Amino acid sequence: MDADANGVSAEMFDKEIKNFSIDSRSIEAGELFFALSQKDYERAGFNGEFEDGHRFIADAFKRGAIAAVARADHVAELQALREMKDRLLLVDDAIAALQLLARRTYEAWGQPVVAITGSAGKTTTKDLTAHILRSAGRRVLKSERNYNNGLGLPLAVLQMVSEGRTPGEFDLAVLEMGMSSPTGEIARLVKITPPDIGVELLVAPVHLEYLGTIENIARAKAELVEGLKPGGTAILNADDEFVIRMRELHDGPVLTFGLENAADVTATDVDVRRFGESRFRLHTPLGEAEARLPMAGRHNLMNALAASSVASCLGISPAEIASALQSVAPPSMRGEVLDFAAGFTVVDDSYNSNPRSLLSMVRTLAETEMTGTRRRIVVAGEMLELGPDSRRMHHDAGREIAKLGMDVLWGVQGQALALIEGALSAGTSIEVKFFHSSEVAALALLDEIREGDFVLVKGSRGVSTDIVVSALRERFALLGADERAGGQ
Image (cartoon, rainbow, N blue to C red; front, top):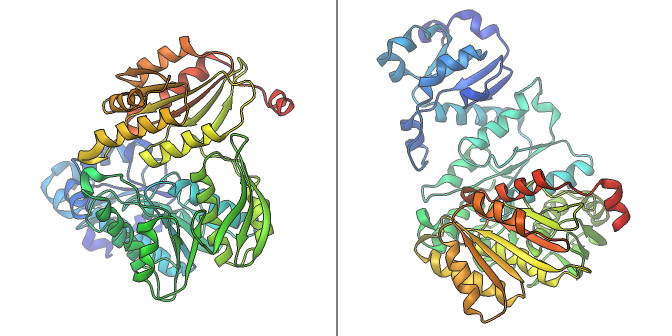
């Protein structure tokens, strides 16, 4: 970019960029701010109406931004922006500029990329994969939080040139790739960082509000396999009928994982009697090992098998994988087990929910041997973006929860009322209540919780069922670390 033609002062190009940001509220000194606009979002396939970042350029500068990337047409139209032109990098599309910068950074780096997608479990699998690889001595760049869309992925890649880091500090990257609309989102992401290894976790009825059918979801997820580098490896869930069909889309190496169907990476002798952990024998193409995963749920065991598949592709032995798995911890709000001094236990799985993951956690509760447990309580928030069949899906899930022997089911917000109706239709003795908000449910549970209760809290992010967990943590003390160790 020519400094004079752009209007940027020449000395700007001598300054070091500390980090990259799309949120003026979190800007720190030395960061480059990308001012995004509605036109940028629409071109990139995002749904909805968005704030125009050009309105906050002045705020970003006040917070210490070194410069801002802005649309040339916006700057030409607004006198206030023209007055800041010596600190603006003018482009036609700020999101495209962000993605191009990430692509060029990736190309200059040139190391392997592991990409992970699926309707659920992406963040957990990413964290498990990075943990195993780091334990084996690999220097891993991983996307933070759930940075998995056309904004998050570039920001994740740019971590390797942020805060004084250099690309040479990383051997490979483990990145999430997500989608929520039928606009080729994953196809665009794989063009930024073409994967050497692509992991397909599962296809489930999420984002149906935008995608319409589960077949459309499968087609969108398959863009990851189609976008693999020539000779890249596809890692596929052998237990998911939509995922295993993706084998036909790839003429390179394929590695499968699963529990029900024959797979290259699997687990036998699975023991889930103790809540919060799975013990099993891990089988990989490189051999076998006894393993322990300190996380609850069959879905997390599947996530661990997916991560183990990546490790196997990279030549890591089953013994090394098993050693790494036993030291992992559940991410916040994704199956975190909280023991309280008052004698009850809460499983915080409030980050998100869909019928498949909800029932997986409830089945885990049903299968777990819990000495002294008085009641098994499920606080289930509405599951969003399920499309026109949402009510039926909630009803079926509620019926299954009751049949699995739960003692109490509380539904929170909207279609969660159908969860209650489904539970009642099962003809069991389950106790049910419905609450219009997580705030009201939290207040009720503070009065209702008793010694010996075991509570699962789960719901879609938009329902904020984490409010329930926060209320309990504010009112009651957690069991101390020493005391907890003695109790096990």
